[in-house]
Image (cartoon, rainbow, N blue to C red; front, side, top):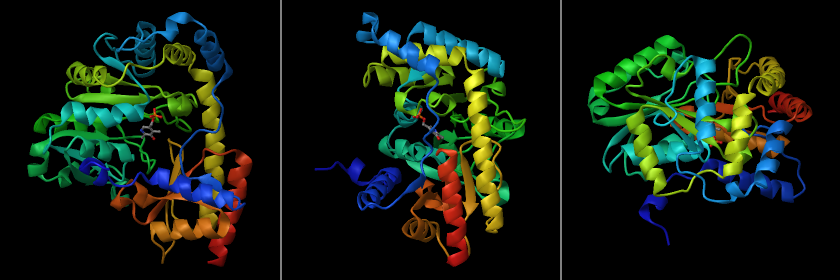
Length: 387
Ligand SMILES: *Cc1c(COP(=O)(O)O)cnc(C)c1O
């Protein structure tokens, strides 16, 4: 039995890909998965030790507070001040989440009524779109095109759609295209949102995963009064904590309050011991993340060099865990991905898994150990030579 809202959902491609890879492995074939962005570097020890200790504290065996523990909201507020020079009220402008994906899915339920419209980038992190659909809203695509450096072109948005829209999802540094946005872009986004009276949900999951001198910014550095913006952060990529399920949202207090009200009716918060571990993570942020980024940067170099040798077009990312590359002439995203997997066991994500404007591209993730990436790149090169 299936409700229409489930029947009408597009497949969650990553669940489907995992099944295909599992079947291949069961047949004894080697698979190197450069599909999903799931950090391979282990969570730092000091965070794990905190979790072990806190697991034994009976206070963490009880229901956690709905708003998250105060220490965590204070740590988030301190980190935000140090990192972005933005002041947050830890009572009203911060809400911890059971992973950012949870918050991204639920925010649409907090802002959208059936029939309402939301502006969503295409390609995008799939939950931006499906969250809107589950809430009964309709999605207006904002195409991310190579000719615009994968930035949203606000002049191309139809005014009728913008007038109907209640919210807009943006994500820079961007997953999947790895594009980054500067202050001017965020200024334009905020002006647009104010003009059409809509809320910007900025997904900043990669704010700490950047390379060279580049440092991603927060939309709240521009929308300092938090008039139209909320911003989602994740500990998954920053601290290699994808399996721990914790993230947070900050910004406009009315919107945060709506999401809080919704969530009090759905969940009972994040396990207390995990919240304590998140405090320790945020308070000691610099060393681990800096080193992780050095490792990622080296891997990006390996992939970019291979693509160059194969004459495949791709920009070197300034942030994120992904290389967004054009598929060679004669292939679609799907046909290239499936043939590559079939012939080499190397899996990359077809751009179309993120939306129809991802056609013509693949996303290569660098969250595998160096030796596997190296091996995958050798196989990739051979594949391009042969086919
Ligand atoms: C990984 C990712 C998330 C999910 O973060 P979780 O905290 O693990 O749920 C959200 N948004 C983007 C763009 C991501 O790439």
